[in-house]
Image 1: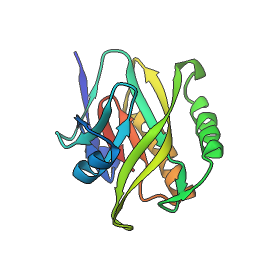
Image 2: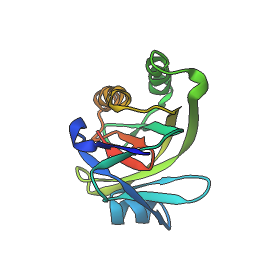
Image 3: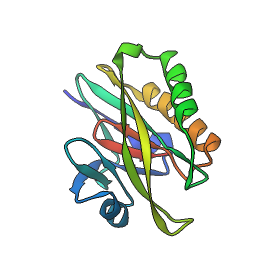
Image 4: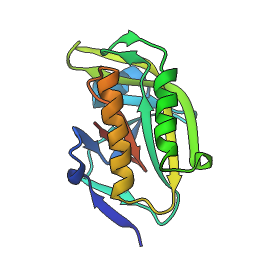
Length: 164
């Protein structure tokens, strides 16, 4: 039986529990506020309910590390990727982590434009995900948001997305 966790307990800026396929990064950002390009297609997360679906096994928690600082200034994110890995290794087995470099887009309300950037996604796979795991990722996202001067940092929790 699958468990559900109320996303409201984490104080996310945004929480989107569903997703749709979009034509491209630009369209996804304009229509839904953001999009991520994967090998299979480009997707945007959309509103659903406030619940995080926890599966019986192979739950995925991901953090999206941007390649910009202060909204749209290009930076090498290697330091932040390495710091995130070092932080996550305190809690998770490195063999349960995957790394994915891709492109993501989001609509900057401050700049009133679509920002497309390279991102690094770090994913941890766990059979027994619980609220503590989500708090660990939120803590990391809060740090990256502050250090990289971002409007928000994205977390993916199974098929849902949260902006911190």
